View (cartoon, rainbow, N blue to C red):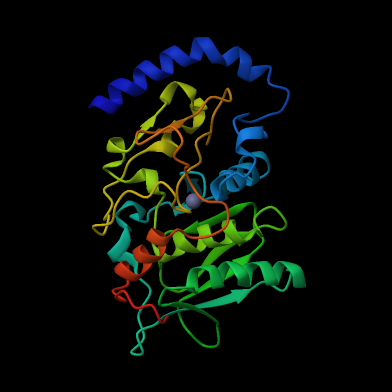
Length: 281
Ligand SMILES: [Zn+2]
């Protein structure tokens, strides 16, 4: 209820104040991720927003669209219940979670190296292993569709992860999309996020307010992770260059991650897949 009231207030206040600026913006799209001197290294999500907002369509095909900027949702699927435990990849008797993949032959050698680095990034310290598909029924099909996106969790059968070259073929972006494929949503979508961050609704590009929804997430008893590779950056979907997410902890807390998983991201994977806390993965 609170949120509905807030959204109404937001939409009426921003429409007057910002529509004009937006319409006369020199470039189409939100301007919040322009280069900033004090924040030169963006987050993985900043790169994804750049790729998806400026080049890609939000509608992937007739029945599939993007939610929260880069999570593919097919009409008719009960995707919102697909959090954490409901769409896990199966675990092998040896304790590893093998994710079979097929890589499009369109990628260059350099692209392939980057994508593999993204996989290694996930594998390090976790029980997940990416393996080239041979005969497995469930697998990810990595292709150059439009932009960077993934479905949430394992859907069964072949599922696409789109990594368009060159914008999406960066280690951090690749890792971020594989985290979605493992079943993780964005960190600031946690139901308890309002205890940790303030969403600056009036600063968000009006058409993208829905990207800041909260969901009934399983937080796996792990602390809120400001430095998660799944966290939006402070200026995500900003329409006027002002912050859209402010950490409550301290203004200096850095949100998101450019290239690597955080320590808690790794714990998250091991907890979700019940892999324990071993150091020898
Ligand atoms: Zn994402």
